[in-house]
Amino acid sequence: MALPGPGFAQTRTTSDKVVLPFYLYASLSLIAASVLLFISTPSFQTAHFNPGVLSVTHVMALGWGSMMILGASHQLVPVMIEGKLFSNFLGHVSFVLAAFGIIFLVTGFYRFEFTVLTKTGGILVLSAFVVYFINLLTSIIISKSDSLHALFVLTATVWVVSTMTLGVLLIFNFTDHVLANGSVYYLTLHAHMGIVGWFLMTIMGVGTRLIPMFMISKYTSAKRMWWMYGLVNGALLMFVFSYILKPSVIIYNISIVMVIIAIIIFMQYCYLAWKSRIRKKVDPQVKISIFSSVVMLVPAIIILIVLTLSQLSVYYERLILIYGFCIFFGWISDIIFGMTFKTLPFILWRKKFQKKAGKGSTPNPKDLFSQQIFRWMLGTYFTGFILFVAGIIFSGGVFLKAGAALLVVVSLLFNWNVINMLRFKKE
Image (cartoon, rainbow, N blue to C red):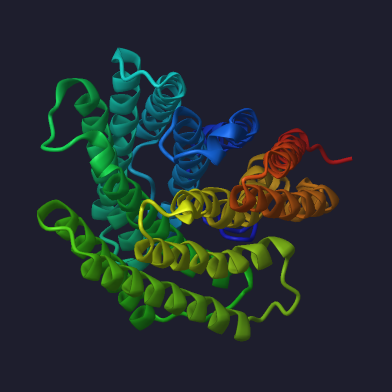
């Protein structure tokens, strides 16, 4: 992600040939996930562990969320550390490994077969994250940077490597029994290492950099960032060790409360950046990114309610499904929708027009995509999201189908705007 201006130093940017494939893959994954969601709506009226839910979840988590993060991070980390990415080649390697690995993995999950194909997919995705971690760590070491934002991203990468390592073990455990318990027992641990360790840590680290930057706000607070860092990692470590050694509902509740406090601090950080902004007119893309910080609280509150219910309760499975849906189609999608149309235009502007800057008129980055299509996308998205959640609550097949159909439309509108940016030519 480049800084919002044409004069941004070339030494701090990564080749668009490294970054753009991740964005494109993520965009197409959104279509794939939405279509899978539409096809698999009956799966959201049953227990949450089934082929439909499993495949949709992993397309959203890996193809949509993670690939977008990887693409953005390859661009943003050099900005954070004020240095260069160590290796563009490793960026390409990471993409290829993840691109094929996700396809193999999701195909296996959709078939509900834990065969060589699924195992190979898991290993490839794990390898992609390891390569990314090596590239990231080496870049930070060479730059001698002490960026707190970069520390968030680096720590998040440690968590996602740990998450994927456990995930690969779970796949093998279905056939080879390499763990003490069955794979289903560890799913909650696997999921929350990824959701909290990878997604939440990354969003907090990147959000505290980008949101003030796009509002032209000078607000920063290392103290609040350290509180977020300590609370999230402390909560996650408590949860992991308790889950492995001696499961305790009390520990789980304390961990959730710690994460909620960290989210509130992040919300406060965004508010203070908003309050001290120089740019009074805030783009819709930034507004929805800030709104996503509020949406973060919804899954945390849902999981607290879930812990009070018996697994035999009729509401238990429905709340679990709503919880996952709110995370991937709500919180994570919200911030990606906002940040994609703030960062990708700058990346493409630099590619298409930076050499022409100062030699004649050039368009603004925001002119590269359609604000009208973006508004249509948001309206359709919120309607589809609400309908689908209503379908889960009331076990209504019509609501689920209608909501999923609208989310397919959302994915097409998102890709339409991305394609428009790629094809943009000055009149």
